Image 1 (cartoon, rainbow, N blue to C red):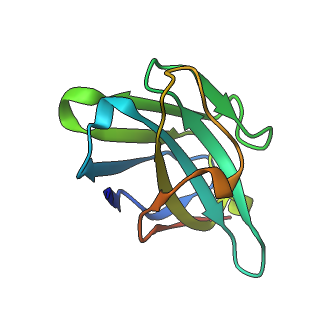
Image 2: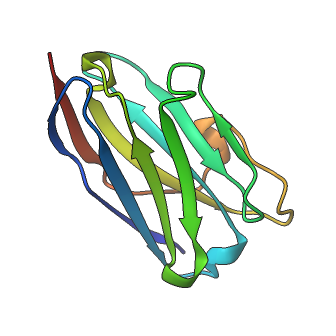
Length: 126
């Protein structure tokens, strides 16, 4: 079992930045594939970014070049640095995890991930 706790959300003006954090506990963090998803009001949950335990990354086209996912295995934490925020980035952001046998595996599919946090709200004003 893995417990995930997100933090760092808030209200920011368009063009601003936020850094989300997700602390994991319960399993060896360094063997978890981690990801960030988001759900905007009235929309389906969508993939944002993912990182393997060897540091390979993938991003949704909508955030590529603006968001950066990273991890600190010593702190059991994954981060999402969000720059150049737009009103359409407004959503609840969720951290997700899956124990992976390979350090090269990640996925943009929500059903790949077994563990989810409660989410943190990000609101971008225009």
